[in-house]
Amino acid sequence: MRRVIIGIGGVTNGGKTTLTRRLIAALPNCCVVHQDDFFKPPDQIEVGEDGFKQWDVITSIDMEAMVNTVTAWVENPVKFARSHGIAGSHPYEQQEDDEIQILILEGFLLYNHKPLAEMCSRRYYLTIPYEECKLRRSGRNYRVPDPPGLFDGHVWPMYLKHRQEMEDQGVAFVSIDGLLSKDDIFNQVYTDVCNKILNIS
Ligand SMILES: Nc1ncnc2c1ncn2[C@@H]1O[C@H](COP(=O)(O)OP(=O)(O)O)[C@@H](O)[C@H]1O
Ligand SMILES: NC(=O)c1ccc[n+]([C@@H]2O[C@H](COP(=O)(O)O)[C@@H](O)[C@H]2O)c1
Image 1 (cartoon, rainbow, N blue to C red):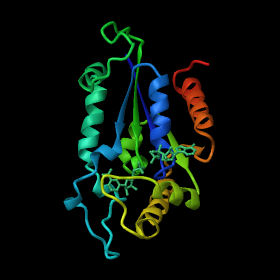
Image 2 (cartoon, rainbow, N blue to C red; image 1 turned 135 degrees about the vertical axis):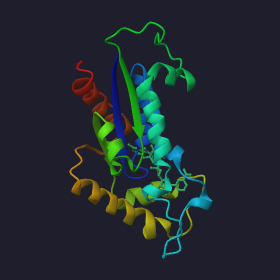
Image 3 (cartoon, protein in one colour; image 1 turned 180 degrees about the vertical axis):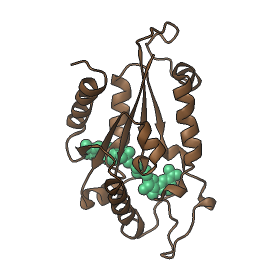
Image 4 (spheres, rainbow, N blue to C red; image 1 turned 90 degrees about the vertical axis):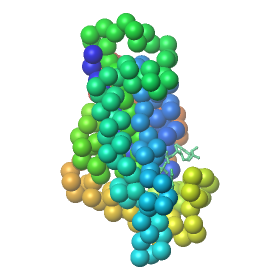
């Protein structure tokens, strides 16, 4: 059984979840782990000198739990799929030795966590400019709503900082223009996955 982990990273509201949903529907034997599912509870999120809860830092996420979840998939992708209620149309019971199992990791701080970044066979990174990001974010409803000023005071500066850190660490990624249409983004990434990872064209 061949295992492949694909990273879908990038800026908040860059289109990661949208792209991930489409990839899951198109790829065989495909599971997903969302980094957002590992945010710590609000009372464990530090308040910064700026008065904002510091959601957009890696310590706001339980990365140990996330890595454990990914490790569970690596150890047994078939069991993982079953225990996460993924039946699909693919015959999990009849695994061929050369069958491929795919895990998508989706999140805004994937590549700032070295062990996770290194687990990805290929890393995609969605970006959109400041204005578009602020606009999309203003229409989003998170479990904890953004207080006024959070985007400019915390979210965007942290994005720039983490992006710089990732580049300084030499993490290789395929950059995706999040301003393209949802269809174009999907086609670009799906074609790349087929060519570069699955070796089918
Ligand atoms: N290519 C796109 N063009 C325009 N809007 C998009 C595109 N991709 C996503 N969106 C919209 O942007 C918002 C955030 O998308 P989402 O996929 O949840 O982003 P993320 O998971 O990166 O935070 C949603 O309203 C979504 O419909
Ligand atoms: N899911 C949550 O519990 C929660 C709570 C507060 C903020 N957020 C925001 O989620 C963002 C990351 O998720 P997206 O990349 O999906 O936008 C961060 O910018 C963070 O500020 C999420």
